[in-house]
Image (cartoon, rainbow, N blue to C red; front, side, top):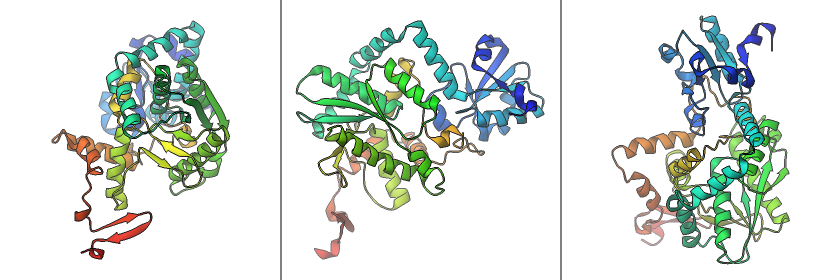
Length: 386
């Protein structure tokens, strides 16, 4: 950092010495990132909305801005400083704050009691919305059989972490024998992001097995669809490592909202009707199967469980997020999934049943009214049997 920008950053330790009356904490990440967790007391003003919302920024208090890792907020602080505001950027951003608070919690020795409360919340307060739906999906779609050895794949986000706890609760019921391996792949995380994943696992008493790959380096220079390529490569690595550990299944943390969003995305952007299946056989790893036991769980209930237990997870620990390239200048999200998520929310305002109807639409397909369809890669047309 240049000398002229040195006073534009404030460390976590300096920030903690300030009284709440002295500053306003401003989260400049986009809405999708902020939905995964914010620093308590912060107001959220995405970068793309900052110009039109300047009137919300007080002149009589210091402004402390933060983004994912501290880069975008530092540039924004420099701009506002030039316009006369008393402003600085929180060093390390949200990820840095999260890591520091976890370290403080560990030093206080509060992890054991927290872990007990987290497990208790699944058995009591959120039993109906989380564990009951988890067990229902397993039974309804026949996802777990006796003597399975399942690799529970953990990315470090709220969904996969909750899935691990739900599997532990299922194992506690001991209705039939099966084994679990809690698998974390490090595709090139920053040290801070990997530490956050490991600390959350320790807090929640999830005995993770970590292996490393170099996927982030492989896709970093890819301009077109790097996220798609990254996801495909990660899936292959997970299958391969899970099989090496003697597993016959991998479990992913996709939930109900992921399913209905995938249905609409296929229709609107790919011109096809398909869904995210609750289970499927691997085409490249014989004998391996992918299962999605969170299939019936709503994302809003996952968030309620997360916030009730004061848990904080990273939205995405990839290098693009590390460098704050997800904080676009116009404040919008590049994700088609986010567009569809907003569309569903808008439709729900006038039709409260829209989500359930989307989900049921791929269960109630009438082939007599379908012009064409594919089966095992072969296209069939209605004129063949007309």
